[in-house]
Amino acid sequence: MQKVRVKLAGQRDALVASFDQVQASLKYEGVQRNIEELQYDTIVSGTVYGTLLNFKGALAKMGDAVYQDPYKKPPQAPILYIKPKNTLTSHNQPIPLPQGIDQLQAGPTLGVVIGRTASRVKKGEALHFVTGYTVANDVTVPHESVFRPAVKHRARDGFCPIGPWIVEQGSLDSPDNLTIRTWVNGKLVLENTTENLIRSIAELIEDATAFMTLNPGDTLLVGVPEDAPLIKANDQVRIHIDGVGFLENTVKHENELTVKGGR
Image 1 (cartoon, one colour):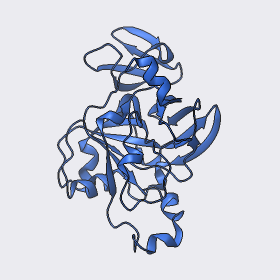
Image 2 (cartoon, rainbow, N blue to C red):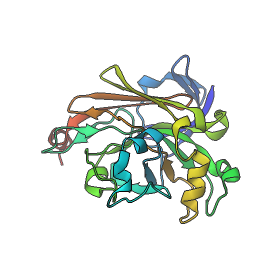
Image 3 (spheres, rainbow, N blue to C red):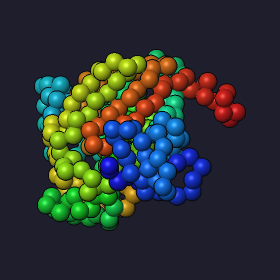
Image 4 (tube, rainbow, N blue to C red):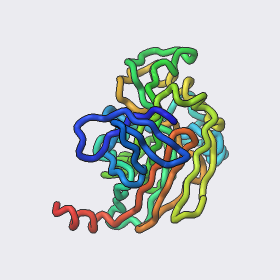
């Protein structure tokens, strides 16, 4: 069993539980429950940072364009952007499809949750600043330019499903060889591994904290693999990361959610 921190819907605070992958259950406060029977709240509490072009294949797909204007050369430092609080949502909650947009791009990725204030951290010590790992879907409206990450495309309401729990750092042998799989409507559409990161988790933390402080509760998304799937209304997206868990959400028209919510 793995030790996880999870926040259940209606609960004020997160709790510590044991995750049994074989039985697909969580055990907490002496009770064992099937993970599908539970409702979850968003587990992360700090700022969520996304990372562009950190998978080797994603950078390779840019081809010669990476040497042309406005880029001129491959990234020399992490390309980071913020997924603000309005983007955060939890497992089994809908992903809003904005009016006038036909499809979105899913963004299966590993979330690295910071546990200690991290500033100018060296690679060899970086993982000591990590409290654990979670699954995230860095959703975006499809767009071509990555020169300046587009807020309008990446920071919409509900565009960062994350969770449903945080697996504690000590429960994983290494975060650098985790397989990430994505299913859309039950069909496997993407498989990749954190072995293919340009910057490993430790290197990413070192490079990011060289110019900014990461605080406890902040989450660093390590990047989205190449060929991330396009998704449309009523598509069910399931992301699984070995040793970390799974995240499932369904795309719903934004106006349907507004009517149901009474807003």
